[in-house]
Length: 191
Image (cartoon, rainbow, N blue to C red; front, top):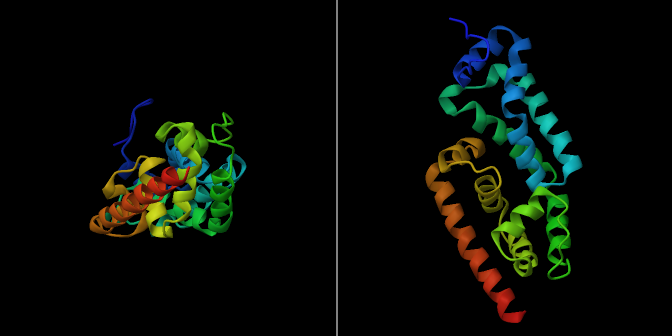
């Protein structure tokens, strides 16, 4: 059964199509590129985001025959690939958070989606404290927090994207929240 023009097909149908005809993988790109791009732009800078988002889809295309719908959704699989690519840039990301933490209190400069998200999470005076607190999280904790906060994935989708259980997502998020509250509280006590 083929979809009518303009009808949105399910991810399952998209997978069936691109496994039969690799050219139909463009529909996956059209459906999810924007979401992947926004997530990566929130984690890294805008220039790297375009490259890494594109690389996410190149890898997904190359590995399309290895996608297993029994292990999770197509969306979560793509976010998992993107998260792994971001992990390769972890040192640059950590340097960015340290630089953001050193920004002048009350600065109105908003350069990236990450800056806008951080600004909306707390007042401008909290931005440096939050950025500094994020650097104190483990890689796994930071991945969970940012997949939930920036990509707005559910616990189930985060678990699928990172290849971990929902319980691990919950425990990492709980530990991260405690660390963030403590670090921000200490920063406020000294500020």
